[in-house]
Structure formats: structure tokens, C-alpha cells
Image (tube, rainbow, N blue to C red; front, side, top):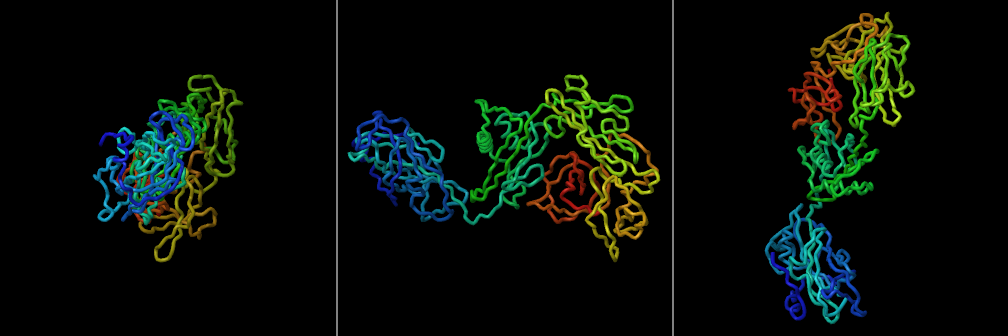
Length: 588
């Protein structure tokens, strides 16, 4: 890098005598600073001039390939401080391959300069064009110097030559140099960028819901978005950017870009950030807008909004308990499960057909609450209520009952437990035993030993009349019906999911432990029915995402099923090859 040379009086004419190329003569507001501390329009008296004159040029894009010597900006694209104007623009030396070479090019160097006859601009690459400007100065016969702002990057007058000079008798500063940042793009690029997070695809305009956390710094949020971990309980949930459907691996977002997007998003919501990058997390949450673009064409981009929930410390919320058989059990809920640091315990209560049901004392098992984790005082019965109780003991099935407790500080805890209403004791129907909250595919039998999915499912815990059996594809199926006389109904499910008659089961139970997380071995197949872009990512048996993907439309043999991270999964290979049930059709 060559040192700055200040140009004044007679020396200016010699150093500024570079003949401009492809000049565009225009006028626009501009500015400069006299080194004697004053500034004047040629037609007015002297006046005080602000210090720190800057020539600012924007980032521009051009099509990749061949290029010309014409300037890529007009006078209206360039701004100068302190109210000057431009009378002429011309390019000097075409494009340079780096800002450093362009700075040297201001002084006349040809190192790194692109030749329009032998070189072509490469899509996705950044170049720099050197310009020659004639500037109308505010005062005749005065010395001026400019700093350059190249698309937000400052180039000090102290580091480059030919950004200073002496105005002529007509108030003109000639051959003042400027630099423009230029990115070459491919106008034919049609990629459709997208993001992935926790195995799901998010396209332009989508919103990603992020769990609540007390983390409250720009660096922590940027780190979370780069590596997908907002706090320890989140586990591996990498957020990645993909250029197109063919870009399966994707990439992490640039660290500095992330911090910039976090800061600008917080500013847009009027959330103040202190000198250490910390801020107060609003109770209603906040968001961060992320934008990434194809390097071949910045117009092909995807913007998603990451919505962070507000944070409320669940330790200040009530603790709900269940007394079972007269003995106080462990706490069953604190705060709001799935957000903050709240949690709840899964409990299923089984009641007799036609029996009375009290949501606050299911089967005589009293529900009560403490004020908070640290305050063990018992809340009054008016502070603990059932907010949802759809149970009808004359209709067998599984119901969700929700109980809420609120203390006088306004902190709330909610707990949802299941109520299973059994059939009448004389009922000879049999129960479907599958996975809580899910159902078994119901099939119709076709000619030539074929079967077809009816589109319906028999829910776990539902009761059916059963009839004859038959074996298809090596699997035994049982005919089922909701009607006692349904012996001819063409509705079948695998026999292994029929759990026996209701009459043979106990009348009333309360089960606070389940084995839903244990693997159930299956004999069947599935088809990947995912409708999004790209492929479906697999998990291991511990719920961690793997670098393995399967294509939609593919068929796989199924070896087992179980609940992982609260969602039903099927094993299509090893213990490192589980696929979410929501993306497949299981065929039994």
C-alpha cells in the first residue's frame, strides 16, 4: 500500500493529469472540506465548514461474463458530505480483483486490474471499480481531502493517493478518485434457497418457533442460531441454510452476519442493547429475521423469522401435586410444560363406565398445589381449578383434563392428565392397543390377496367388535367393526394390536408410569410421504439428528416403533435410523 500524497497548488496539476475514460457528465449533491477550516460556494462569502469529508459509493451488481469500461454508477448513486456536487464521472482502469488492489489503483497501479479483452467477471465474485470524479468545491483556490466509504467500508485519505487536491479558480476539483464495490451475478440462477431446523424445512416467509430461554445477549443468540442450541436442554437442533434442493448438507450462517441480523432485528422492535450486547427479554418474546441469498444471484434469497418466546421463571409458579391412595406423591407439574423451565408428569386415570367423575379428585385421588417451589404453603381451592373437563363416563374413550393453579403473584402452572373411560362390564368388545395419541391403519381386503388402506385408523384405547382373521403378506389381520353385526364389514387391522376383551380387564386403575418410550417390534413396511423440499433426516434412538437422509416416495421395511422426544418414530434399520411417523405412511 502506497502512502498518501497531499496535492496542493502547482503540484495538483501534475498529479491529477490522468486522462479519464468513458466519462459520464452529471450533477449531484456533493461535499468537501477545506484544510484551512473554511468553505465557500464560488459565488458567496466564506463560511465555517464541517470536518471529515467523505465520498460514499454503494454496492452494485452486474451480470457475470464480459464487461465494459463504463462506470457502474451515476452521479445520483454517489453522495458526499458537506453539500458539494459532481460535474463528471469516468472509470479508471476498469475492475480490480480486491479492495487493496483498487486502493493501489487509485495511485495508478495496475496490479490485480481486470482486462476487458482477456478477462470475464465470475458469478458470485466481488470486484472493485476505480472512478475519476470532477467535484465542484465550495471555495476557489482551497485544498481539500476526502475519505472514501466503499459500501460501508471506510478507506482513509491517509492510506491512498489522489483523493485530495486544490480547487481551481472556477471552484473545480478534478480527477478525485473513488471506488465502487461490484458483485457479479448469474441472471439465469434459479436456485430456491431454504432453511432447515430440527429436521423440518422452512422457506421464504416461514416462521421458526424457538423455545423460551433466559439467555439475553446478542452473542448468545447468534451462537444459538449458528449452532442450533439456545440452552442445554435443547440438544442438537442445528439451523442450516441450503442453496437448493440439491444442497442436502447446507451450511451454518456466517457469525458476523448473524450478529448483524440479531442487532437489526432487536432494533426494529425497539429492544435496547447495552454496551456488553445484553438486553432484557420481553415477556411476550422477540424475533430475529434471518436472510440468506444465493451467491450467484442475491435476488434469489430466503428470509425466515425465528420467534423466541418470552421467559418466565417457573420456580415462581405453583407446584401441583396428586395424592394417590392417601399418600402424597411427587409433584406432577410446575410452570407451563414445554416452555421456560416448566415441566409436567404424565398420568393416566382409568374410570368405570357410567361412574361419577370429579376432575379435582379423579377416583378419589386429591389434586392440590403449593404456592411455588420455595413457598410450600398450600394454595386455596379457589386458586386451583379444572379449566378443561370433557369427560363423559357414558362414552368410552380417552380424554384430556387440564388443571390450572395461579398464585397471588400471578404466576401460573398448568397440568394435563388423561382419563380413560372403560366400556360397560358386559361389553365384549376388544381394545386397540397401539401408542397413546395415535391409531392403527385400517385396511380393506381386495381380490388376489391384496389389501388397501381405507384412510381411517383405529385409535389407541378405542373398542371394537372382532370377528374372523386372515393372513395377508405374512401378517395376521382381524376383522373389526363398531357394530355387533359387522361380521361382513371389510375393515381389518393387524391382530397384534388387539389387546383382549374389556370384560377381562380391571375396573379402575391409576397409572403414573408408562412404557411408551420402549420399542415395540413390528413386521411391516412404510412409504416416505414427506411433502416438503429435500429429504427427511433420520434420528438415533436417543433422539439425536443423524447425517442420514431418505428420499420421499421410497419404501422401507419397518423393524420397530417407539416414542422419541414425545413423537412416534419408526425404525427402518439400525438404532441410528429412526424416522418421524408424521413423514410416512405405515402399511402394517
